[in-house]
View (cartoon, rainbow, N blue to C red):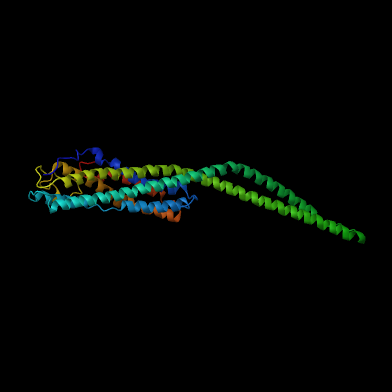
Length: 357
């Protein structure tokens, strides 16, 4: 006999569109990071924020590319198992159904592990940006001081240049022959001293200017790092939400796997129709599948199929745009990315089978 229903009743929250929103939030937040945070030098292993985000987006792309035909295979195997004659142990069709359920569970676990890894990477990028933001804040505190030093250096250089011009004035024309050598020597000494002073002042100005530019640049990078730090916090939360989505699906599949593995022989309960646009007509109302098990498979298929459709129809294309922005450093597509993510959010209820939105 099949085991009693251990999967529980299907509730709206189990297949709510709200569960899919973190997947959209990941791509939307990446778009915001590219558009507003700019590029920031970061400590190894990242090198820079842009390089880190490009690597991160590759992981997101792979996590979203999952197959989604397991539910159809499982329904067919369950129908075959339901039709087989009662035996003392599980038959071939039942073993096949159990193997498919196990395989499906492993596929979901793999996707969940990918999102867990992405969450760790996002947190690491966030920490690196926090360090960069702190360094920028420290540099910003000295930016005004370096500007003061630059103004002082410019004033000294201006004075040195004026002294050099005075030192290079023409010698008096009416000189006694005996005075020429001494006067010229003194003049040359004054010019040399003035030139050395001007060179020293010019070098000091150049150094002060470089220090000022470095401080202002570091302050701006720190500001960008602070913006990125906040957005990366949102990205960590979105990745955690994606992990939750696939953990939720895993719990459902573990119940299905346990039900299929424990049950054997012909079921006594009547079947229920698996409704929805993703369910082939030929498999709706498979005879002999217990109601609780059929509902559990329907929930799992709704979750698995909806995330696959969301990625294929909306997110992977938008992610390609984001990666293009990362590669070129452009931000002109930022508005389009935001709009496409908004469209994806609006489309979420329609990605779920009827009766599960």
